[in-house]
Length: 287
Image (cartoon, rainbow, N blue to C red; front, side, top):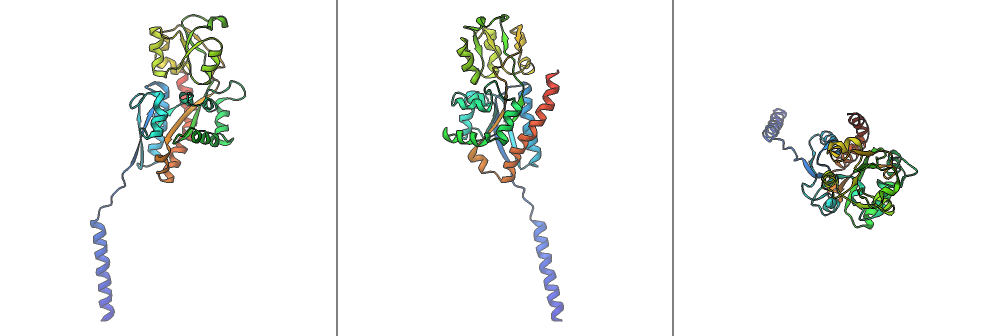
């Protein structure tokens, strides 16, 4: 009899626990949302940014979500890095040339010297040749609270769009020309009057006469926002920007607060997008 009583008592306890478990709904942990502003208002580069975001959102299984904001949604392009540093934005999708004004060393991570390597080789140096450590050291010296990932090797960029055909270098002198990064200093030394504008303002500046010539990146990206409508002279061969890539930067405090597996998703999605950029853009460049 004692053993039967123990049996029924144990069974009753087990049933009570089971009922309590069934009665208690499982509460899913709320997803972490990162507000990330892109430097692009449309076109192929916004497509690339969305492709990265799609990978992050799908890889995280709902536990992490990037809310991608178009250009100028919160701050101007020139203010994006500072906004990420301060936590006004959780992240940004742009190119290192956009913070060249803070340090000429930005050119090492895009728009660098026009000899010695391609954009793929530059990314190899960033990932495996000590570039990331140097970047983190630079951010520390500038007092910037950011962590960044680099992807998407861009081919050498054309010299750009001109109001008149350029047949000799002397014609370049005095031209109001849009470019960014190290190229701005180099072409300034050649006598050009360099204006650094974000991509979304180039076409309107050319149309209004604020500038005489401009480069942005490649024929597809440029035609996406209508450069062919304001200039009929497009000069292809150039060495002013022989390599460039995207930088995806996050507020370091926000990044460090994420679970390690979510940090790795942000990093590895960047690496995955590096391959997808080549495949996707090969098709788009042919459009």
